[in-house]
Structures are given as C-alpha cells and as structure tokens.
Image 1 (cartoon, rainbow, N blue to C red):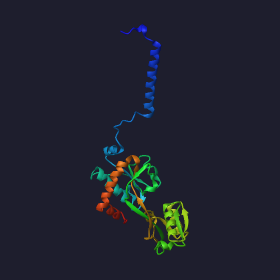
Image 2: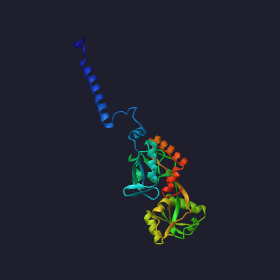
Image 3: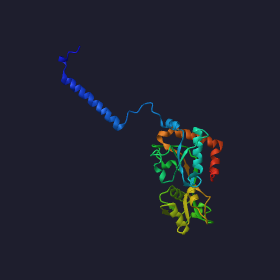
Image 4: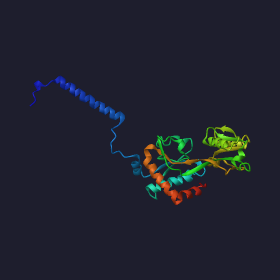
Length: 274
C-alpha cells in the first residue's frame, strides 16, 4: 500500500498539469486542423469508383464540340464523355455533363466542380505541375473568315488587314506563318470575337483569323471560312494532378476508340472531319 505521507504533492501536481496541457493541445489541434489522415484513406480514383459517375466539363457555345440546346449540350465533347462513363461504369450509365465557356471553365478543376475538363482545352493552357492531360481527342486548326470569293488561300492575305483577338494563339500562328511565307500582314487586335467579326462586316479588315471551331460559330451569309488552314491545336482532357489514375484510364479508352474508328465516327457525326 502507498504511503501517502511520502508522496511529493508538488511534483505530482506539476506532472498532472503537464499531462493536462498536452491533452488540451491535442484537442485544439484536432478541432483546428482536423484528425490525422489515416493511411487507408481512399484515393480520389477509388472515391470516384464508389460514386459511380463522371462529372465532365464541356463546351456549351462552340459548334462541333458542344452547344446548349433546350438545356442539353449537343456535340462531340458530351458524346466522348458518355463513352468514357460507359467504358468505366457500364453501358447503362451516363455522365454528369457540366457546360462551360472559355471564361467560366477557368476554375472548374481548381474548385473540384468536375473530374474531367474538356471545353476546348489544350496543354498550353494548364500547368503540368498541377494538372494531368490525356492524349488528344480532336485537332483544331487556325484559318480565317473573309467575304466569299476573297478567301481562297493564306497567300491571299498578303498585304491585307487582318483581325485577331488580342494576344491569342491564332495571332501568334498567323504572324509565324506570314514570316515563313515572307508575307506582309497588318494585324488589328480586338477584345472579342463579335468585335472582330463586326470589323470584317464594316470592311475595317479583310479577314478574321482564329481557330476554325470558333470561326464556325461566327460565320454568316456572304462570308465563308477558308479551307487553307494552318497551325494546329491538340484538344485534350484535363484533370487535377491527383487524378492521374483516372486520366490513365481515359487514355486507354481514347486509344481503343481511335483504333476501332469509333472516335473518327463521333467527329464526323458532330459535323467536322479530323
């Protein structure tokens, strides 16, 4: 039996005080920072498999890729998203389609709004440190709109005024191509596609240079798109770096679709030829 007369109450009090302080610090840490991460925590891919449905961001305003009609997105990107979902979760499944445009898609992945982002994206738009990208599902080109009969070839732009979007990839491609051909082209920069098209209609410029898919949206009666395209942009499917396993699976599916001819059929059925 402990002899209470020999107990050093001052030392015991100090020990109990320290133990209590440690307990309080641990409780505060859990409240503020959350409980320690368990080693058996599910990966993002495993959680997706449990959910059983892909959330895919697609274009909502680009002909061929995706346009919003009667609250439903129609085009190549939602078709590919459906094929991906069926290949992963079964033929009777369908993905959650989330419509975006070039402005609204910027934070789609950063805010975890979608698992995969299509929406006319290429690898130059995303940091390889933060995101992973699939192989291409479509290759867009740069071309130009002009009045019918005046847009046969790129060489027809020599000595002409050309509308481009400010600091766009299409503008860089035009300048590079003009230098290569030793052409003289006067570039006039505009802030938006409608402004550039309006300049063309008012004869302020002779042509409007942009990605072919974008030009399809703005071409109208009396104007046409040149078939003499130049430069190219490979459109890819993007995910957060933590979803590398998912993109690996996506790559397998796209490779199989290319090999079987299924992807080319989807492209042509959507109104374009790759």
